[in-house]
Length: 520
Image (cartoon, rainbow, N blue to C red; front, side):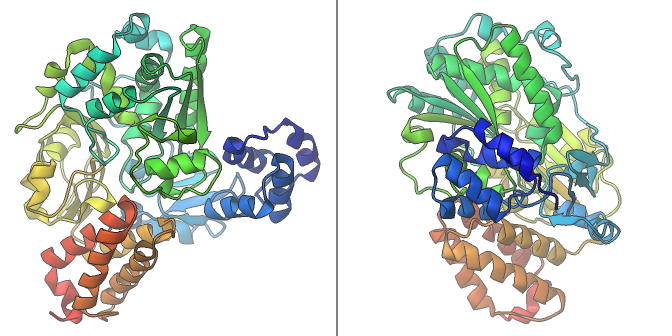
């Protein structure tokens, strides 16, 4: 590890002292000086007038701050593991193993600094609301397709809420809260308010927000700026995961274009770059991170719409949710709602990876089945399929019988699963469901913020259990497993601990023979 101490001496005076800039300052030191050592952490703490121990806490929490900027990182998430990540890791002796890099369509994938290997490519369609099949190279390209009309002639907040409610759109980060109700709730709170974009998608298999930011960043930015205008929020932030270097470049260029066009006059819209913590995608943990602390979820209520960033009412929206809003407001909520099928509302972006001919990101109706999604958009299945994950790591692990179930909450309820972040992962029959479960629980164990005892200990215990079962051994009884799952589901603070039992329950129900060592 190389540390440029002389550069630190000239850099420190340039760094802002506000606690909210701690993560930014640490990231800049990492990029321009070197990995964050105790000496660098102490120097920054003294400069910002923060207790040294508090800065050490932050540095130790975020996995990338102590990693060189030009390090090689190999993803060992479930899809990459299935397609040769362990072999890639063994062939790259100086590489670091990481849980997920958010490029599952390229599996197996690694990064060398900001370079993605293999090179980033996109497989997408030209759906009616998002239109990813045609990228916007510039702001002029975006405007030529009908963009910016909402900023040229902003609709009223009342009309926005009305159309969002009529559309039935819910948050596409995974929680599924009605978007119209969220905007209405924020509007009822007194100012000042903030607008925050959650661009920290990190669940294995989920790549949709990255596609939006890389191909049509202005779409999300138009809705973000509109929200800032109607909520009279002079400050807005986009919290972006560190691994998304290509998306970062596209967003910075797009923001520069908006400034040059005068569309950000009177507003400040900035990127906040994460540092390798999946839990920061949970909205209250993200706020903690933005305020210069470890990304640990807050108890709710109060909700961010009431008490959010710096204690003020805050609209937090996922990238994809915002990307749908321009089409909804131009064409009407009823129009968007009618795009769904099987009584579901609208469309969404589906991340499709694994054993399919064309891994990528496809806009398709809510209510579609996995079989329809893969055969109509992703080129069909490749080889014999063993199991599928319907919507991200926490959504469940399902057998072939679920291929024809609608990918909605109602359609997957009988399978004790959900659509989650719409990350459909297809695994070949050669990849054991038990191996998939082990790698899934490894991810949750490594990415737990460690705040809740049930989540902190439970995910590690369940990962150990799955590994033991791979060798035909039982680390605990079936009764003890059920006890752990219930405790995690009922007493964890946030969705990570509450949802991680789903894949375990699915696997036990659908492949009971693999869990025979546990007894009955």
